[in-house]
View: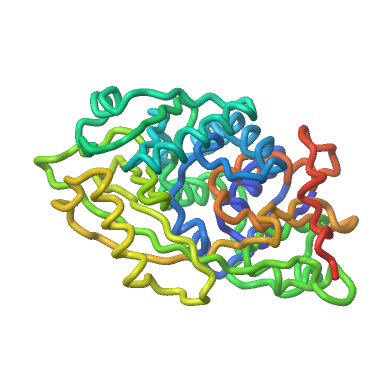
Length: 358
């Protein structure tokens, strides 16, 4: 079958590779592959730590994605030796003060209520695992099942794997599904999906909004490396913060969340991230600031993705908001099934692309 994938972020690339591996002829359309939300993402595969209150329909999608991620990594490795930054050391979640510790305990109880494993440990045990953590922390939780990839490396690996699997790349934007010569079309263009027509009547049913996030990259000096060995998430005066150690001796610090339409890193956001990161891990003061960046994540009104068939020819896969890196494994498997008109292995009822049609 001849398939067009519109969009070369992590969701489009993962799905294109899955379809090519299943024997289809796949063409990906994107003027700048892996330059959108995927380029600015943290890369945590955290179905437990990323739990958000009253987002119950999201949990089975996240759990399925985490379970399927090793297969996506293995599939990528079958076609290329490019590194993905996939690491499985687990995650620590820490609290800066007593109020944050109360929040952390409430969140752990909520996670356990939904069948997720999060082990309460002492701050002393946390510092034995990560000696660079502040001695003033008030609480800690260990989550063994939350892992990570390095998004920029992983998307480069996916592009290389796609090319090796026979996927063709066309460097231009598609604005109408009728522009492409294909039996089936997958729209995986992130925020750009709102500008692609030819599959609906009236107004575009996808209600997407850009949610910006500031994110920092710092380099750990030789005398401090490795500063951290696993992902550390924290709460500082109820503000979430994460620190992600990378194989290239950098740390990723993130992320703010704002809907102000400003696509450049904001001074207030950078200041807040550095201040909170230092509260959790004081030695970050000695790191080199390599980059501050901001990216727009595609959000829907209920913060759930749009994933489903919308016609005999078109499938939509977008709106993954803050979870695009994690959910890419689910999006690839289920999206490929939808394109092949095969029932996906999990329910996608909550992800109906037409649910917000006006």
